Structures are given as structure tokens and as C-alpha cells.
Length: 135
Image 1: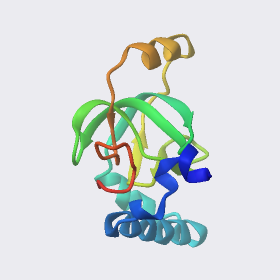
Image 2: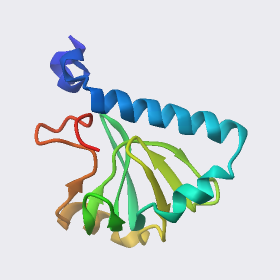
Image 3: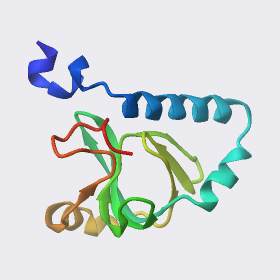
Image 4: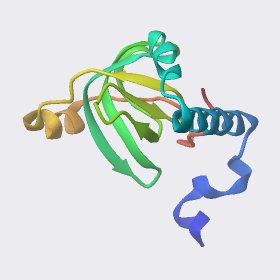
């Protein structure tokens, strides 16, 4: 029943890449529980997300924004993979795929325009829309 409404839940979509990403996320979460200092090193190479807007989807919370220096996508407007952890000070977020340095959130007056008019590239989604196959 659930897989008819949400096909991405079907176990046939579980790949080695998804398992690796989940293990990396779990490792980072464990480290965050005990020592935040490792984040500084991760942020040195993390892409920057600016003018971002939080968006809730059936897959979870994502950020839509302008990314720069993304290792796979370069610089463009994207939708991140699911957000799992965020810095209370607003400096970074950890998604299923990676850490992001956070710039300025989008102006509240621009949020609807950003969501309605921007073409997006999805970080962590393959052509079928499943968020498990691409780094």
C-alpha cells in the first residue's frame, strides 16, 4: 500500500550508493553527538547555499537555493537532498548527500517567486526521482 503512494519506499530502489550515503550520514551524526569540531574541516570543502528556502516534500525537508562550488553540479539553483541536521546558528546543514555552508536565507517576500519560477537541479536524485542513486 505505501509503495503505491510512495514508490521510492520499495526496497528494489535500495542501492549500494544509498547504503553508503546513509552510513556516512550516520557516522557524521554520531560525531556530531560527541564533538562538533570536525564540522570545521568538512565546511572547508562544502558547497555554499545562498538565498535558500526550506521546502517540505514527501521525502522530507529540503533546501532550495543558489549553490556555488558543488562537486557535481557546479554553481546553479538546486534542491538539496533531505536535510537531517542543521546548525542552530544557521552556518551549516547536513543533508543526506553532504554538508552545506549556509549563506543568507531568501527574503521572505521572494520565497514564492523563487519556488514558482526557478528551474532546479536536484542534488542526489536520479532521472526517476529516487534520491538514492547519485552522490
